[in-house]
Length: 335
Image (cartoon, rainbow, N blue to C red; front, side, top):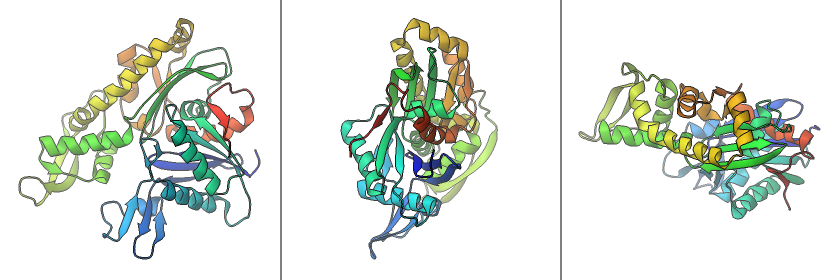
């Protein structure tokens, strides 16, 4: 692939840009900071992420994507433009861009994604559905007449799909993923422990203490927040069991979506999946015990892909090589 071909995994939590020559070259939080007084962007990515919950009123820290789709078109376009500029420098080139979209995205949401890429300087835009990109990035051969199942758990959506012969046979998408886990953790501690914690604190607690299989009740971490009883700062020791209780309902929603995909899948392909197993990708795949939790629910082995967070990004630039053989889940967008 030439240096003018760029793959973008525009996720709710992270934006990852890859090129054929160098692989993943940028991985930044999907956050942008806007100064209302000067009316200009002052930070994006990791620098803006550090401002969440800490910025003064005149600085808006914005997440331009929600539930896997663009919710703030202007800020999304500016974020993509800045990220592409960071990758290619100030060279005057118009790259071909392939961008990932959730499998359940609407026509209006697709148009917003295409417009954001065009505004960033793309000369040609391709759209690839996240499950297809995830399987390609995980090194799976989806061109064979053999069923492959992937569960891609991102920041805003969890996408489940079964592929065979280069096409999607059955798919489902549910808006339960990393951000929903964080919100449930915040709600759990507010309702049960009477302590109000921030989004970043919930994220850190999930990473450190999240365990869905054999969750321990021993204290394994500490969170800081504001007591809902006294209104004063408070610290609280937490356990893996606390996090497990907080997110189990969200995880069960993903399990229900997987069950729906199984019900829509032809029996021969279900047999292939039983033989090969389920591939788990996305940032949510890093949650300890999730693979064993899924295995217990369905009786089918589930394994986490190598570098699950980067699978979709790798799959975007790999799609250029096989685009003529992909039957669906990949399309050239009309500009």
